[in-house]
Image (cartoon, rainbow, N blue to C red; front, side, top):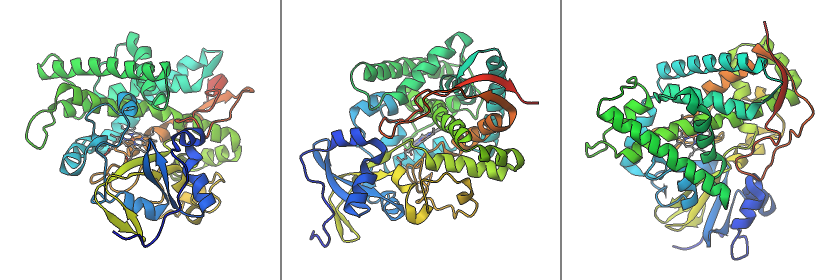
Length: 419
Ligand code: HEM
C-alpha cells in the first residue's frame, strides 16, 4: 500500500494519559491544532487513528472496514460491557444478536416503558414532597432502576432497590477508574450477573414466567445462529445491557434540569409548546452535553480513505462529542438551541450521541428510542409538573471525567407538585 496522504501525526511514545487528562476534548483539541478532522497518535502502546465528523462517521460505521472484536480493554469489559456481549460481536453473529435487542423496541414496548416511567415519577414526586432536600442524580437513578427492572421483567423486591441501583450505576460510573473504584465496578457486575443468571435459570425451569415481550423472557429463550440457547452468563450480560444504560439516563436527566436552570426562557417555551418542542429540546440535550466521548473499532482489513492508509488491526476512535459539535453542521455548536432540530435532516452520521449508522446492521445504540422516550417523560415532570428551588451549589461539570456528572449531583429544595 502506498501513502497518498500522510495524516497529521501526534509525536511521542504514548498519549493514553493525555486522553484521560483531556477527556471529551482530547480529539477535538488535536483536530483544532492540526486543522484536520483526523490524526494519528499512539494509545495503549500502539498506533491509533482518531476521526471526527460526518464523513468519518460514515466510514467508521462501514462494517466491511471495521470490526469490534478485541477492541474494548479488559477493564471496560469487567465493568461497563461484560463478557461476550453484543458490543464485541461482528458480522452475522452481531446482526442476529442485535435483532434480539431490537425486537423489544417495538412501538408497544416503548409505550409500556413510557407508562412505567410516568408511574415511577409520580411515586418519586410524592416522596420528594416530603423531603427537605433531594439529590436529583441519586434519586433519578433509583426511579430509573425501578423502571428498568419492571420493563425488563426483573422481579425486584423493595428491599433490593437501593442495592441494585448502586450496583448498576457502579458499572457505568467506574470504567475509567483505577484502584478501589475499579474494583467497586467489577464487584457490582459480578453480583448482578450472578443474580440475573439465577433468574434466567428459574425462567428456564419454569419457576418464574416474565411477560413475553420483556428482555428477561426474550433473551432467555433467544437462540443463536446454530439454534442453541445462549449460556446463562451471556443472557445475564445482555439483560444488564438493558438495565444499566436505562439507569444511566439519569445523567442526561441531570443535564436536562441544568439546562432548564441555565436557560429559563426554554422552560417558558416548553410550558407553552407541544410535544415537537419537547422532542427538539431532548435532542439538543443529547447533542450539547458530554456523555459518551468516543467509540472504538479496529481496522478489519487494509483500505484507503481520502488517500489515507488504514492498516489492518489499527485502533480507530470516532469522536462522538466532537462530531456533535462540528461548526459546519451545527453552526455555533456551543450555543444551546433546541430550534436547530426544527429542520434537522435526520442524518445518522452527523448527530451521534449514541453512535451512528444503522441500528440493525451496525453497533448504533440499541436503546436510543428508549433514551428519548424516558427523557421526554422526565422532561414533562421537570418542566411542567413540579416546582422546586435550586439552592446555591456547584453546578459545574467536568469535560474530563467520563462520564461527566454535574458536581453537586443537582440538589433541589421545596419540591412540590404543580396543579
Ligand atoms: C443513557 C444514554 C445512552 C447513551 C449515551 C448511549 C450510548 C451508546 C453508545 C455510544 C453506544 C456504542 C455505539 C457504537 O459502538 O458504535 C451504545 C451501544 C449500545 N447501547 Fe446505548 N446509550 C444509552 C442508552 C442506552 C439504553 C437506554 C439502552 C438499552 C435500553 C442501550 C443499549 C445499548 C446496547 C445494547 C448497545 C450495543 C449495541 C451494539 O453493539 O450493537 N443504550 N450506546
